[in-house]
Image (cartoon, rainbow, N blue to C red; front, side, top):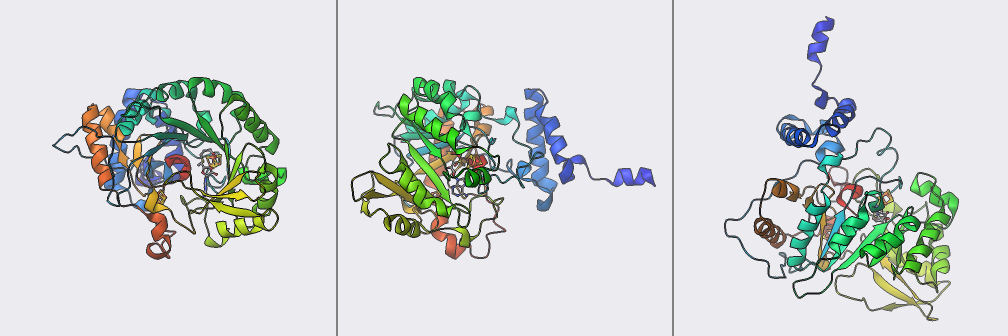
Length: 419
Ligand code: SAM
Ligand code: SF4
Ligand code: SF4
């Protein structure tokens, strides 16, 4: 009887709770064995697993390897999608790991101690990242943002910054190299990243109140350390620095005015981000979104504001300045006022998967092309074709096309795809 039960047990990869053990074992294999096995597992998962058994960790592997078109082409410095949006910005996720557990991004309930992060061997190496980035720059990308997860957790990040900072646009200009961080390691790393060639940082900070901030970051991290990181980053010249505050109704919206007051007249530009329905683990609800119009209304009631023009086409934030001349704020209305029509951003995940939208449900495996030995021209042609066929505009369609489907659409987590 015992014998039969043993035989009837599903193989380990079909038992969700034990998937963690299995993936950890996979992580520890030598690189060449790991790569071979990972490809086989990916295939097995696609071929045989009922969807409900596929854990987040496994679903991350379900991406198509792009076809290389037969007619190869040389990059022209401009490629536009089906809605005439040029490819101009690349966001690169350096790690899916983070030392915070923000309630809106990596809540502890979903990213607890048992969560299995991506195996080290599957991450793109610095040469691979730079190679892909160079191809994107040849297609017109002028701005690269390093993100994650928490990008400062990636070891030797300064080396990568140094390599990316060498890239030049087709007409010989430097690219703009920026990074988004939770600020926890900024005081330690700001100088070395500046020396390596980083231009600017954006720092996330959701409250000035320690109790609220500690609850929101999920790990009890104090506000003072982030503020210290901001000061050091400013001192070493990583400015103008933007400070991003995600506003979650009922959690930190009482901090809107105190945050505005604190940063008014400072060298930092505060931006309020509407809480987005990215990923599935944050259990997003529309009634927890505080619209940007409400943010502006609340601040203006104390400190009068007026709208100002955007710096450039495609800028995500709408700008407002204080009427007394003491600086400006930005509001990013990804939910209530979608800006898909101007979206020129591509995202490269930690494992080299290209996503043409933050809300994509699947991507294009560029790492596979590199590791299968494809040439730069082949990869470049594949990228140009992918961008030309892009039609994403999730936020514009959010209300209409996705009504009632929020729970069934399998969106990728932000910590993996890169914020
Ligand atoms: N760890 C870094 C950080 O927090 O700045 C970089 C990665 S994080 C995913 C990038 C940005 O996405 C942060 O500013 C964060 O606040 C924002 N973010 C994460 N989840 C979000 C959500 N559900 N809605 C709106 N913004 C979100
Ligand atoms: Fe980490 Fe940034 Fe996500 Fe917070 S928002 S959990 S700091 S990746
Ligand atoms: Fe761009 Fe997609 Fe966001 Fe629209 S929803 S702005 S297409 S990333």
